[in-house]
Image (cartoon, rainbow, N blue to C red; front, side):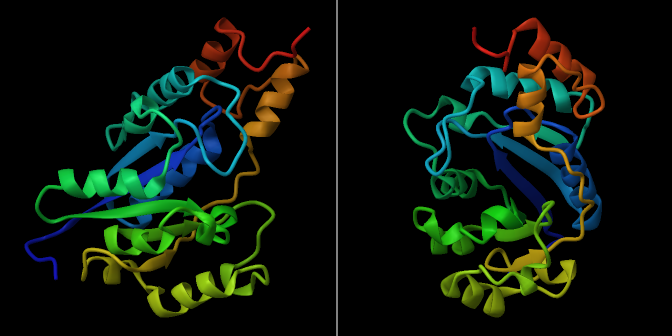
Length: 224
C-alpha cells in the first residue's frame, strides 16, 4: 500500500509525428480529472508495431518540447529517443520505476485504439505490475465496454482491474485500469501530414510554434 499523500504522474508515450492539440488536450484534461501533478510526454524512438515515423527522432522530440514549453505540468522525457533499436513500453516503465521517488504512482496513458491491441506488446501483462493504465477515448471508437474487438485476454484484465473512480488509483501503487472521460478532438497526425504534403493549412490543428517548425524544416512535404 502507498501512504503519506501519494501523488500521481502520467506517462504519455507516442510517436508525436507531429504532436497536436488532440494529444495536448487529452493530457491537460487528464491532469485535471485524474489529478496528475505532472504529465511526462515520451516520444518513441523506433516503434515496433507501426510504420517508421516520417519525422526523425530528434525532430519529433523538438516538436514536443516546443509544444509544451509553456505548461508547467508537462515535461518531456527523451529516453526512447536516445535508446538504440526498437522502443518497448515495458522497458521504459521499468526505468521509471527504478528512478521513482517515494510515494510517486505512475499511470500509463493509452488510447482505446491502442489498448484493444495491448496484448500484442512485449511483456504486456508486466505493465500492470509497474503502473496503473489510463485509457482515453479516440474518435471512431465507442465505449471500451461495448467494443466487440476486445481480445479475451485484454477483456479479462479489464474485468478484474477496472477502477470505478480516480480515488482507487491512490490506494495502491499499480495494477488498475481507469477509463477516463476526455474530449474527442478529431485531429490525427496522419491527417496533418497529408495536409502538409498537399500544401494546405494546418493552422488551429496544432500549436503555431510547431506549425512553424514543420514549415522551417520542410517536414512532411510531398517528395518530388
